[in-house]
Image (cartoon, rainbow, N blue to C red; front, side):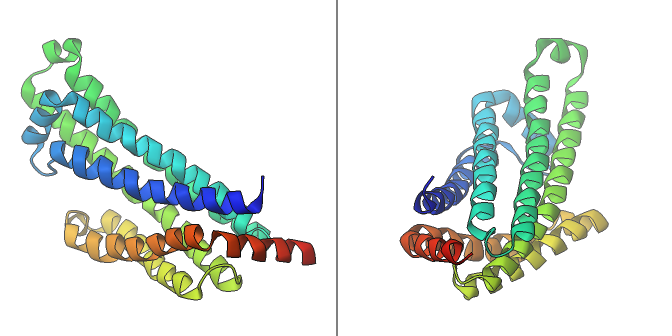
Length: 238
């Protein structure tokens, strides 16, 4: 496959990560999930099963796109440092795998709540308790996955700073995002109050990630031809 196409595919896959995750969360999952109000969450899942499952399914599409991005990043930066490019790609794949396990918790919860066998066997309070447990397991998997994603972002930042393919300002922005991901993951495991504070997540993860990763996405798409020419030149010298 041509280098130009690989760069473009990587950028488009990254763009889909943003687009699908925003749609999946904003239009579907956030309309069902109400963390802290487990009874309402249970009732929403019971009442809007299709909305809930579409939200979950959208994230599995995001995970597929993440694996494509991991492949593209390895191809782009293997001439810079093959070992670190491979490690960075694997960190993103591990992240995607753990993230998928987290969403499987929600998928299994949907099956549990809508299965007549369980409905007849358990009381509503027991099903609400199961909803709480599944959501907490989901949160734990997501926080763990962000640890590996933070490492991936840090390695990616280093590769960008070592290469001449992408603006170094994006590399520095990714370092900030990396620190945010790591603080959020460890903070969530060490402190219950930290884990339940959405302000910290927005400040440490959401804003730095959107700024840095969206900048990288746009750069890959807009500077597609320039990056491919630089890669071809580097491969010729090697």
